[in-house]
Image (cartoon, rainbow, N blue to C red; front, side):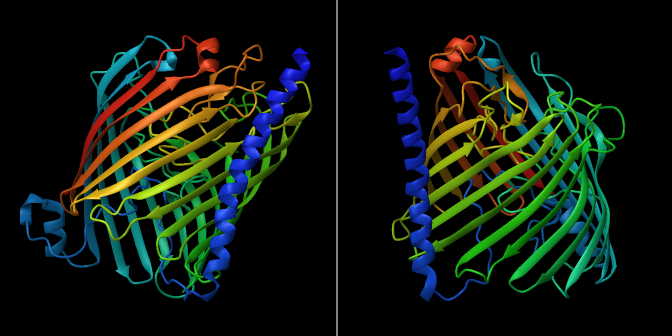
Length: 481
């Protein structure tokens, strides 16, 4: 009887899982058919993720500067010759974490981030970029005075670009730079973190109106406070990432293939000490609009290869569909979303089924509280974005989290193990989260934000940890000067 009930519960959850994918996939399929008679869009579809987790790739603000020396570097750039320009940005964020590691532990602290950049472009086909960053944490007691909270005065970017990214057929980049592709669900600068992420890279971009193909070899920077950051030899990511804006009308189609290798003699979050990694990720993202008010964003990938003695067989998916009421005053966008990433169902087998999330801008991809990564997870999400006046944006979201399998761990947004596997747990339910976010854009130089994310722990976390609810209030200001 017990075995029969357990089998029934697993079957019910599998049916529920498949039904979510079917519903959102049906919306996307319908959209593709509905677009057959729609003129193609010349602009790429913007990411669906609220919260503005995408990093600016340039510290400069172009155009008139009526406020003059209130934004000194912007004013200075207008007085300098066009071939040499500067940029500057300062961000301050106060945040609190109550329920660290789902235990009765809390901390409140202040995060500051200062970036200064120089841009030298002697001709239209040659540019040199250098950006330094100072990231610090103050008043902390529980979180460490270490990366990603603190990394004092380091080289964020230093690269040369041959060719133009907007003219001609190609450009070549070599040096240290941010990498940002698609919705940054697989590769991004993770800018919500106080120190962010950059790569040492060699990159060739092939482009023409309607398409762009990036071919790159890179190695992520390993942050260490007090010294110049460097990458880890042998920990490399090679890839081809394409973006096609005319392939499907009013949509962006982004197929990609990535090859990740890492040495077995250095412990990394992704390898968990199991040996050398050679992993291929093949996937695609499709995002667009149809029938005027509907939009969708779908991304799926499959992973194969080897991790030590294990054979990799993992996959993940993201399905989002939304509708914007454009004729109302606040133009609310309501959306439904489902995220899935496989876990290791049988730890005793030679198959490694845990999805590797690679290098995403992980903030707000699973939830705004950032307690879970795109590994061994099921997340059903719904919410609404609203525009209040010309400057305010309000976002309300709800998430329902489950483990893909109880035989694997709970993974943090960094990809590290947050809670070891607890097969004796009687439920896979991690919890529910409610997010309330407000953002105010004063102008192109200054914006503010504040909000609250609260995670109500579910039965699994109550059994595998102290089960303390997690609370994350925050407030920030960004000043581009």
